[in-house]
Length: 481
Ligand code: BG6
Image (cartoon, rainbow, N blue to C red):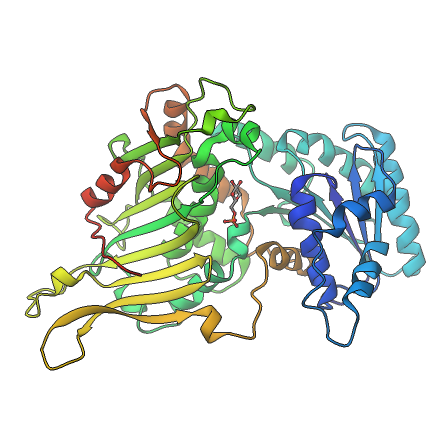
């Protein structure tokens, strides 16, 4: 990428997110040649460590594969680690940030003369409680005087509408909207990015994507493991704040929004906001929440916790396209399998002469993970002498269709977007506000213990009530696929 010396500054450098996602994403971009030679990475955190100690910690997360075959992967990794400088300091004191700025300046000067532009990207891999403090320090000491400064922040952006608005105002007083990149890593997933193309570039889909043809939509996230040492964080938030209000709602926007005027970030995000504004208040009769047995065995979770680790709820979009079509949003931890998928179920063909109903309905499924795939469930003639209808699939599995292509990690793609200055796959402030407006009343009722939390077995499908809710919404389950 052209544009002058690039500094990537990871705040919270010794934390889990930085180690597991941020540094590996930078490394992947680096080894594929997406980052300029004049690039430096800075790690900032409170613990007192040397550069070498940080490098040592990161080593096991930086996978050497996928390097240019003419280079030695170990050398590439070493070169990359040599570009990482660690600086320790508090998040609320001037000293550390002054030192950080001096270090950035020193390396910028080594790379370029005083007149050429430079670029600074700050990645806040930190708990949101320290965002305001850290952001003030960046604003005070580290703003780039010779080019752009951009800041990536991670969810959770608050706990409800009010706290989110407070955080937004604090950040908004320090940075302009085009400097702020609110990451939702689901927007970086290959199939989520494919949604716009699938919907708006295929004649197959364009005319049928509406209430006349679609019976219901499910957006599902399942994990076959529990909170895994993150119980302390998770218990404060619960599954709706952790997954549904952000990741699944972002997917819903792309499934349900109208065609944007163009692919410009503002046009796309305008449409997302509009569809969110059409969502009706959630009806508690259409909500099931649960908690897996064993959740409270985690020592960081209070013994009397009623935090949901599972939720299934119906969103209804009051507009011409979607009136009457339930969008079932389901997310859960410690379930029977790990997968995320979108399931669009079509209405029955009127005047059935083949007895197709027994075979199941047409469905279009996008499996976001694992093993990315898109498939259509269709009714076909069963091969053979009899005239019998059966269900089969038109299947586009990525591992078969795109054998030689490695699908990039979501964080990798989103980091590159940030460097390129493309905000299409980032959440705008008004989008965030509407998403909180939808969920805040329900969340407050759950927090106040007003909804029953149904226990479910680890490794199960979740509470049976969720399957009943699906059935009530008209979802017809078919076997297989
Ligand atoms: C995170 C949640 O945002 O997404 C985690 O905080 C969850 O609880 C994770 O495990 C899931 O991400 P992915 O990409 O593995 O589906």
